[in-house]
Image (tube, helix red, strand yellow):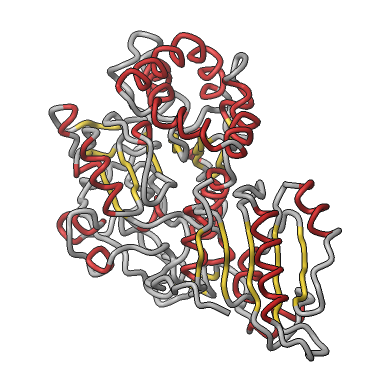
Length: 466
């Protein structure tokens, strides 16, 4: 089989983003997806070591953090998100609302990764409210139909190209902002006002993992914090963007009104700067990835430290709890996933054949990117390359169709030939095991999948961008 070009395993694992960048948390082993060597070594503009965002923590119920925010012209103090925030804090439970839309599986996967990292590193101290704000609260078409519309555009990519590029023009951006505020402000306000977890209060922090969840949520949060007096000034609830694209990102990802914007690459750092986001607001830290890719345990973290070299307690200084000293810093190990298994063990458990080259074909959670045609072409090639006199398959292919039931049925009914063994699956929850059991992966260019394959050291062939 052809080697597809091994991605650099400068790895780490998953979304301890909101924790480790402030230097206050145990980082799961391999806790971040790939970043450039300069960032790994703590050199360069985007590294968390250079992003001294927080001044010393003020021990209030929902902490006050001072951010270097030049877009506000001075140090901005972030105070309690709601009048009753102290009731949830007093119980040691804090609430975060994560906004997304299921336009592709990566946004929800990133939200789940952030939630899981918080659960692993601060057990019982956070409740995350993950919401598809467009599907659940969109007032009417097209806002409540973004998910099916995305699937249509993924099937006919010229439609996606047109909407994407027009939406990135000044006119497209202005129209999107105008219509969202005109039609979605009140229904989305209902979403962002709702009780988070079982605390009886709205979220103490908002995190966006979707490009269309910056502008209008920021206006709504400002309105909520000022009791409707303003949509532009006076927000006190912390707002964080976690960019889940990798090499290219729509301008709507970057809003200079956020407190912190996490980006996974140099090119997106530059894109954020061009959109007016200040270096003091940016942290470059790879992509959040699922807990199955985190590794066995976290040893002492190589986390960043705030100015002055002091390790601050709490989450970015916004949530005060504990002493800020992680279990790893005390010499303990923070268990975040099950023990690793050998490739042989994984193949046995996944009912795959041993000792033959195995390629994994995926199309994201929705099984997109022409997965049927790619699997058929690859299967035919592998079967043709197998020795004619072989009594057993010479190659093996695993196809994960995600939620694409039509693709799954079509591929399951196909006769592949004796030279290649084929296993067809629908949606799976153990993608980490399938990746570690494989020798190469063919996938659409989903940022999360690329990062996860890189963590596994899995040679990767990218087939399409949708």
